[in-house]
Amino acid sequence: MFDMIGIVVADMAKALDFYRLFDLDLPSDPGGEDHVETTLPNGMRLAWDSQTLMKQLQSDWQEPRGHRMGLAFKCASPAAVDQLYAKILAAGYRGSKEPWDAFWGQRYAVVLDPDGNLIDLFAPLD
Image (tube, rainbow, N blue to C red):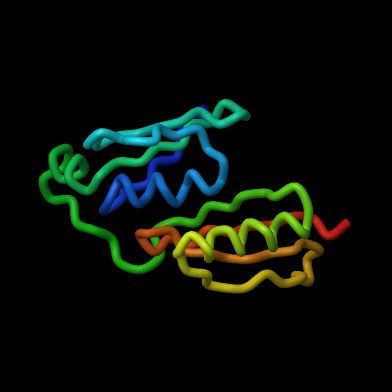
């Protein structure tokens, strides 16, 4: 059974600050932890591992190049996509694609997390 998504991060505190903007239940101070995880309402776990931990676990680990993974967060409404996008930019993070009405029937936007991963925001237009 698929149980967890793990994200490797360069700076744990910066990563958790970003993902808190999605109202995830995360510790306010990771306290130098190399692994942090949370359980989502659907039971899936989302975890963050430091590059330091990855190098300890796998001595030949190398930081990937390019976009390593994508996550998509469903918002409550099209207006909520716009609001979350603005909140993320106001917090100092970068947008990749401003909100737009996609031809497949969703309000969609894309932001970048501190490690450059593409994070999609979406809601049905209905």
